[in-house]
Length: 208
Image (tube, rainbow, N blue to C red):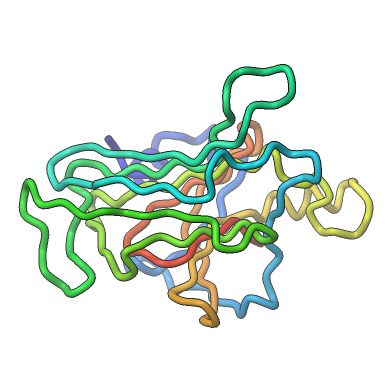
């Protein structure tokens, strides 16, 4: 399983759809930070299906590929749920516990993901401070196809929303009240999703 950084090298067509590049965990570039009041977050449409659950948990194991998803309920008349969030932990991703202890092969940790702000679609990842490998990071994908098309909340759906949509990126917040930091993200306009490599746990959301 390749990280988003490696996939980016061979995915020119995906990059052409949109790349919000700026991050700090891998030391490549200086981080872009903003207070929460200066960010615009996505929100589900009023008629969007509700999440099947607002919280999931799973065991990640060093040496094993693991992943978990959050789904929305099926649309009326459909039987399949809609994947909303997917989080992958490759076999070599787990690096260190929150207290700094390194993971050995076979070591495990229980990971939790929950929606802590439904109006802004902010996700909390626990345990806080969990670290992933810079060579084989965890991977987060959030789909926004069921989010409000009036992205900038001006009461109209027009070209200004398209401009805002091309600025989507995954942002992280170390803890409530702290500034948000933009992660190096891959934006796929056609599939209506944003992906980012995750190097440590905090709150995450799509914003611009």
